[in-house]
Figure: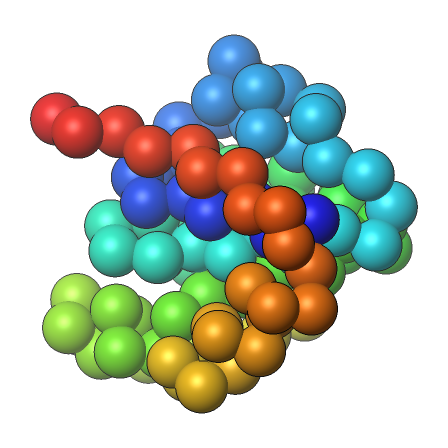
Amino acid sequence: MLHLVNYKITGGSDVKCCFGRCNIGDTVLFIESGVFSVRAGDAVANEIEGVLAKFTIAALKPDLAARGIAESELVRGVQVIDYAKFVDLAVELGPIQSWFSYW
């Protein structure tokens, strides 16, 4: 399954809500402002490092660029993907679970 996260996870219930519903082999893709969650040293960096053995964690490259986040700033092991790979993942791993925040 592909999980999309479009907001900055701050820890606690956010982490449990998303990662707690992922299965081994799932991919969690951080998009839009969600890409702030995958920076090394961020509040949830340890949680992200802890799930890398179970899930693929990825960030959308154009969203990183739009927010001025360099790939070198990310938690080690986070994959950076483009739109074409996003489409490939959606087809390969469907259905998609969206974890969206609108505020």
